[in-house]
Length: 201
Image (cartoon, rainbow, N blue to C red; front, side, top):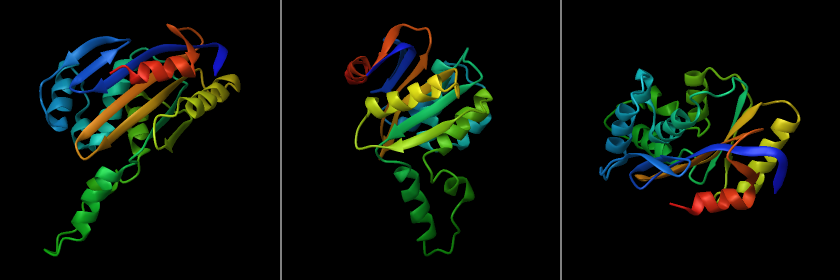
């Protein structure tokens, strides 16, 4: 679906040890493990946000994607994100902690991330957003529903821009494709275009 007047303002990809914006690689790291890769990216982009190190891996992934895209964002920027695994990676850690027979208690610092939408809260705090936000669970990247939702937010005036996309982290594997929808931009807001950009890794 193509909504006249709406455009892909910018897009970001985080996968396979690289972070790119609008098709240009900004950062590359050979670290095989996600924690080392995302920490190196944090330092490379000179991010100054100490709470980053307390986040779970899903939130770190979404946070870095937002860092790349929301440098000069509208304050009324809505967030519409999605993935397949929800917060399952953190859920496993929490379950392991409460099943531990040593008598240790589950950490509140882990428990707080047992909902996938917490990553949007981290982005909102960082960028001082007080806008609409929704997190969907799909079997795969679903540009049609994300586009319909973003278009509705823009058309009804509930948002001036919308950060949309896919942020998946599970068992050490990660994949993020985030993009900003606005009234001016690089490419038409078209589901075919989004699918093509997502598949370009």
